[in-house]
Image (cartoon, rainbow, N blue to C red):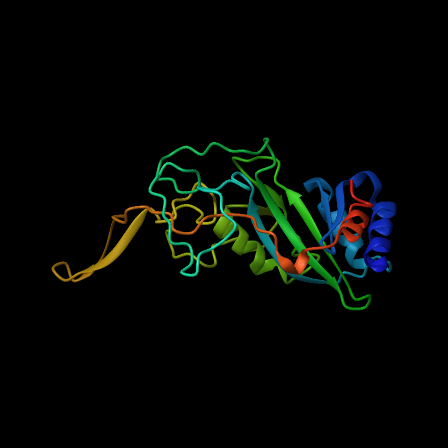
Length: 245
């Protein structure tokens, strides 16, 4: 257990108090969760408070928790040839066809989240901030571009891939997908084979778009595995739970 990280947890709890929806120290990472209406106040304090000095946002990503931990089959090991099995059931969650309904495994307001990774070069410490969008059908959280300018393109990426809106963003446009792209490809209800495919038609002398003709087949399981880099003995694991809500 890092004494420095434990001290950071205690300082965060003392500074923000009831504004913290959760505060955890696990796998040597400090993660705090705040509500969307408190994000800007907390983010500004994380940047400007001398106890934190998180002046650099190094990453921002979106997350869709609707199918978190669910998979087509349970496995933790791979054969010498890799994962050689396949699943043909196209109705399995996360492998949907266009128009299929998604049965969320989360409670309302806990599907989409924006996660901010901050670093303090002055104090040599990191923290992760998570904010859930309260509306699953119209996910929106405030932009932090006025606090960390580097979040501009990251927020556009989260909007493009997950459909998370960032209110107040100066130029919220798609950044990775093509013009006219329909849907958000990192959402769990977006078919892995896509909705349309394109090819060059020599008779028409142009590129044409057609309904996708690929037969869905799952070759790689979606699983959560124990990582040897984060495995701890019993004494360290017991200490890690201290300070968690």
